[in-house]
Image (cartoon, rainbow over all chains, first blue to last red; front, top):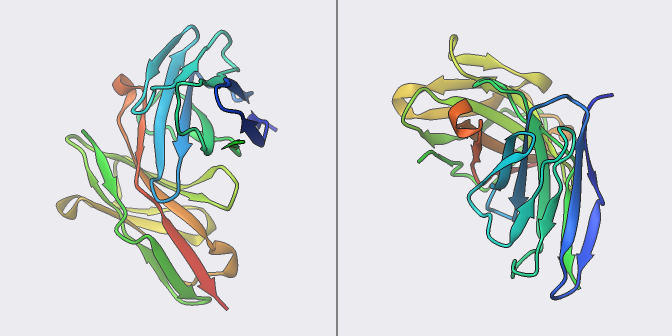
Length: 113
Length: 115
């Protein structure tokens, strides 16, 4: 079945450490997105990529970095510069088109030790 | 800039009763609107979408939504709620391809279903 796989499901970070969240899709979608979800705040866009080797900052990109070397993969690195990284992170992908919905993975919950 | 407001943070409804979730949006052009549902610890699943045509949109799981341009609203409804409908619901507006098809989400409404 086609879908989006996020790993790991749970991740713990020590102070000063960078961690990388994986997102892989086999839907052949051009665009991929990373969102952060905090209770009561909905989803906020971190980064997005419309095509391989290109990506743009979203609304809350500070303290995060991404790469898009392959169409299927869009890893997110939470750097030590992100002072409040505890959150639920969701990856999504979609086709070009104004009416095309985004498809979501099951998320990674990141916590600070 | 576009924005989405879901005025109700929590709603409690009895099983079998009707449900209506409110969504108000702000967007300068024709909006592309979506409703998603999220079960605890899971990703989001698309319920329905609106981008043109009939203002009453049917979705999965017996949900429907009505687009009202004059009120900038896109409320979600279900005539008879099942216990499995307990989840968090998000309304979103799409920015269009030029802006990377970005979605702006509301804060969500958590639905609790009483037996």
